[in-house]
Image (spheres, rainbow, N blue to C red):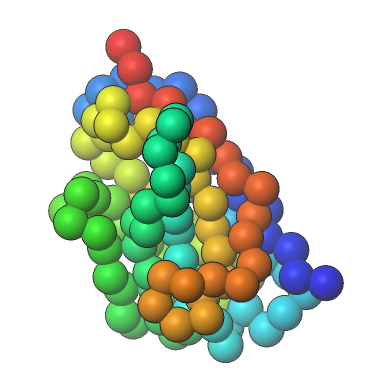
Amino acid sequence: QVQLVESGGGLVQPGGSLRLSCAASGFTFSSYWMNWVRQAPGKGLEWVSTVSSGGGTTYDAASVKGRFSISRDNAKNTLYLQMNSLKPEDTAVYYCARSLGGWASDYWGQGTQVTVSS
């Protein structure tokens, strides 16, 4: 069955960095575009980034452009999100998700908490 397991979240000070990972299994990872989506406390889901199946094309939300970078290693079936210059408003649960096209997704991980606070 499809499994997506995120890791790498935690507490970081404003201006700091974190790298999230998402280990995928149960499907042909290299055939699918992948998304990162987040949900801040009390708010709805917000699309963050998308990467093509081969990794050569990426899209980022305006709120994270220039600070976050999505990538993947198809040999390791792993998706990444490098987050730099973190801000308190980046505090959220971050989910990796298998894309259906665009940011619509059919499978989601359990999420990893990112808290940006001094």
